[in-house]
Length: 356
Ligand SMILES: NC(=O)c1ccc[n+]([C@@H]2O[C@H](COP(=O)([O-])OP(=O)(O)OC[C@H]3O[C@@H](n4cnc5c(N)ncnc54)[C@H](OP(=O)(O)O)[C@@H]3O)[C@@H](O)[C@H]2O)c1
Image (cartoon, helix red, strand yellow):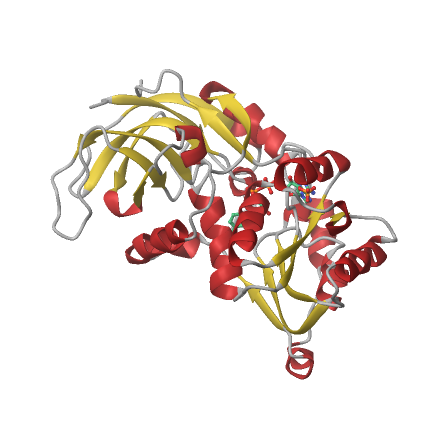
């Protein structure tokens, strides 16, 4: 059992510069909880939005960012009849509603899943948030099935690669949008995507290049669009939804400021000029629009085991961990992620993973 730990804490959201390392006491796990010695922490784009105070679920006061981790159970609290039992030494994946940037943590056992056989802790920490997001958006809301053609924005990112893996499993075809040529090369070389089905976002000819990718699929419209950018690509993508198509919006990466703090003028302009949709037109055009934030799952903990089970049934390969950073370099790692050029998942590695 660990009685102390190191965390990254922010006293007040607003700037990444406010993120500070702190050593603090860790109480024993409460009834229904276990203590986990963290080996790896998964970073999410939402962590940067939370530190900037641009994430709707951001806590009001001081908080430790982080939505997921993986490690080993190091202590077990008094058991409760309605909670899954765990033993010291279990290798576990952890979903946590903030608090993940920590070398050890106490957690309600309903938020745990076993580390899949053969996966490293880094792969396990890279998995739950982004895979659950892609599953919920594509399967539960997007109702994607075999033969569908789906447009995936930021396809070389953490959620994007999970989306491509799920589409492959479902027998659907993907058209990928990415921010630059290195990501095109990655998708061709590591995911086997055809270059004609990868579109670099931006430029006046972006709509024409989308049409070219659709033509390569033998189609004139997408069955589903999976978008967490909501930038200039939104309107041309929405306009290319086929009848009965589903547009699933789950983020707004284009709103990410380039500096370490918020940059209100640009944000205000983006807010005022954001796209607006006509719900009446959706009836006559037979097109649907969904928005979601997976944070609902943390708040409906009784549904977490079923969500994990649905994901496990897809038997996805381990996630691609593209960036590994020492735990002590969380601020630099988050700054790099927010810069938009990372490929796959970024993780923090706790070394040695013993809590401290
Ligand atoms: N709703 C939910 O429940 C939920 C859950 C998880 C994640 N998300 C959202 O899903 C998206 C992907 O998350 P992730 O953690 O997997 O991150 P990620 O995709 O690995 O990284 C974010 C990507 O956003 C793209 N991007 C577009 N405009 C950008 C800008 N102005 N600045 C920086 N990057 C920009 C970049 O890729 P390209 O340049 O290749 O487009 C960048 O690599 C994020 O928007 C996140 O907020 C939502």
